[in-house]
Length: 281
Image (cartoon, rainbow, N blue to C red; front, side, top):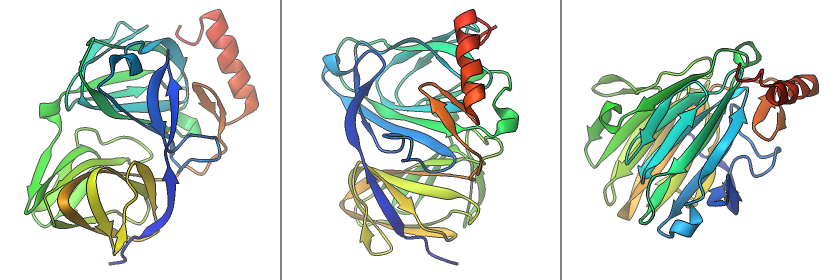
């Protein structure tokens, strides 16, 4: 087996989105900072209501998927198709914008902590105009895989471990996304397969951890080199981190805000469709 290492680190920048929600953005802080097939990765987390209370009022998307993982907090999703879903502690919202969706994500709390991540996952050209879709994944529907010294919450994809193959709550499409929340006890060790056809990253959001003798940078996209497995060791206080990987699409990307297509003409069409009401028609 070939060990993956840290190839580069993309630190987060502090910014805001929606109606002023404070976030930390690694992937997507500029259109040159991506990891095919991933367009954007945001971390949000605050116990100050002013940092999140304005939420994300109604807005459109086309051409990709959004995956929101709520660690703590409560948001309400509503969209033009009539979907309505509560995103709470440990839950995931998997939304396929496809040809077009108009939705809002608004906090359902006026105090306390709101903490989680949002990932933008690109779609290949053949799928960009597919019908929009939405799925609420409840915490109890996310497989929990215990191992000596820790636990894996497998949100998406497949992992083959010593006890067999495990499937996540979502298996995804052409990009074969792998999305795992890994919890490690103090000084715990774990070796996980990440097949060589996937590009990936590790995002450390609590504690300390080392990958193949290199300490992970916290709150940053630690981009992985090629290989087919990772070997992690937690620090003295344990660690929590995300493993995110996917099969590269290798197609041109043209993005204008919430629209991600393959050409400028397709972006112009998306804008025209949104203005005319055809995007969500």
